Length: 170
Image (cartoon, rainbow, N blue to C red):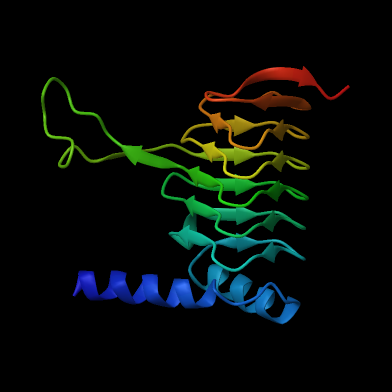
């Protein structure tokens, strides 16, 4: 029964998030997220092809923009501040597989969930990876293709794999 429910949820989520980014469909997408316990601000833009799982762990501020192909895993909780842009193909993950002690099996080791907090007015470029437990400060810019494994200070620009400080915006 659990497998059936999971598959049904995944199918419905995929169909809902395939809808175009027109305002009417945006309202339907926001209602879907809210119906599953998530929080969605006003004028949020959700492009086709995004994935948010589970919806109950997400909080989107006003005017957030999630571009095509964004994947958000919210087991540890994900908060995205107002006026934040998340570029195409970005992955925001608040959970990851646990690495077992010694030579233990990874498959049965479980997961570790930690919250991701992204401040207001942040720009995350295309194809970035934001890992569990990261906080990105207000006004930060994450260069395209970056892998963010550590906190990012407010109003700074970072880039690379792993992401490193480039300069401040001031």
